[in-house]
Image (cartoon, rainbow, N blue to C red; front, side):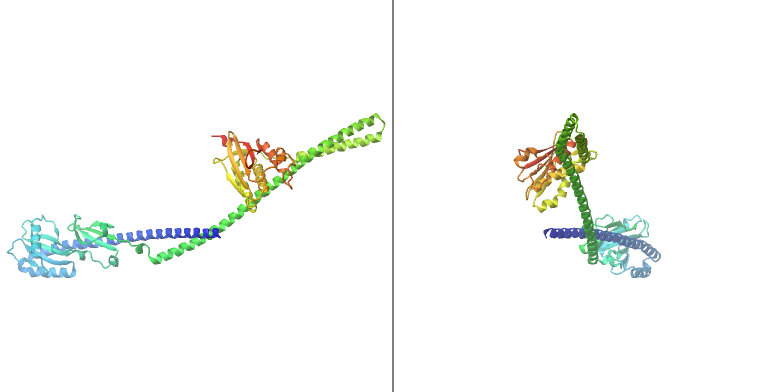
Length: 503
């Protein structure tokens, strides 16, 4: 139950992480989209404002030509043209002709200029070298003047000024600029004074001078991006649903893959266990055959000797029939000896060529193979392996079989045993200890524990440890019962392979 709850929380955490990642990506994409839109819209409005500013130059040129042609006497012509221009270009608030001499008449449309603004116009026109002059109007916020001397020579006696509404210069029907998150402003060419508008925190997303030689104002725009702008509710819902669906499909796929992998692992472990069991049975048969041969060799040898002696005695007499019987006995005894010898040779394991194999892999494999059996008897198998891998020259199956038999004996020794597989290095030798907290080996069999048919189990064959000893000896190592420890300890001592000992 606890494991299922942990898995549920783990999956919820992964889902939340996936949703957060998707929403972060959505926010980034939306922000980039907003920034691109700001750049595109700003460039469009910049071109429009630049064209409008250039039109002021043309209006001044036309008005100056009309004034020069009619003079003060025909100011009606100038005012008619000025009224028409202001009707079609409402950003032009007024048209003004200010004479340098106070005695000459002023020509201007309503609302005209204040006296201080008129004096400033004359001052700037007198100081002009021919280029148009631009000046912010102190008395009228968000307005500025474009000033031209007329005629445009050093002999000029009048100043021509257009009063421009800077807000109307930037006016547009595009709803993008009506959004509360969008802001813009127009600065004087030196960037020190704001004509119109305001940016939050003074940060501009777009900044460029107008493409007008006479009015090179700095046009700036900015976008205050809110959470709702980069995470629109509709798109957020779509992203969450899509991520959830993909996550659900991925989890199902991973679970199916895990089940398949688990089945493959179980099949592999089962095959390993079957192989070890088969090897154990074959080697046990070999040990049994060797034991039987050892036990039967002496009586057979005695029969052979007695038969030979009997035949000798018969030859001293004249008992031909007894001699034939004894000849048959000798032949059968020899035949039995030959059969047992062949059985001994056949039962000896046909060892595979040795190769470097990992001692730690054998220990870990045995722990996996006996995990279920250990759990069934409330035992625990703990690995305490040296950090560096240890390699020995042996057959991997035989090495696993030795460790398997030692751990299996420890499991059989008592219920709830605490078993530890520990490795170490001593010079050029690998040390593997299998210790358990069981009752230990009975004193009466300690010295003969590795002999065939000697066992402390009521149903044991007494061949397991004998087989382990022979396999370890064939690996060039040694196996021993350590008698001076608090726990029952069997120790394998095996020469390290050149793979481990090489630098």
